[in-house]
Length: 59
Image (tube, rainbow, N blue to C red; front, side, top):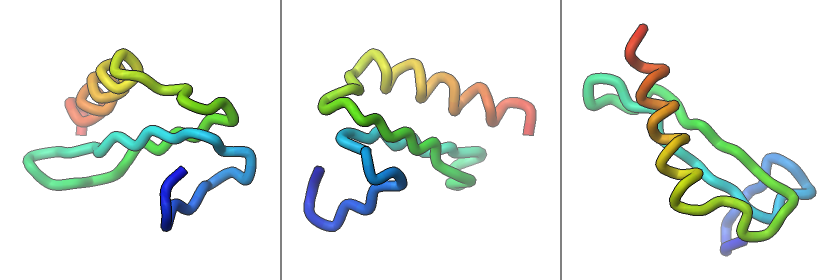
């Protein structure tokens, strides 16, 4: 956690947030919380960013 963090879930111990961008405009965020500390790593980030990009392709 960090100062000012607002968890969506009281059990949250870690979080990853990936912006969803279409044509240079932020249209949303993918925000995932976990009750496990240090749950997310660079591999998770890579594939979640790829997923977010895929979502924008049919908008």
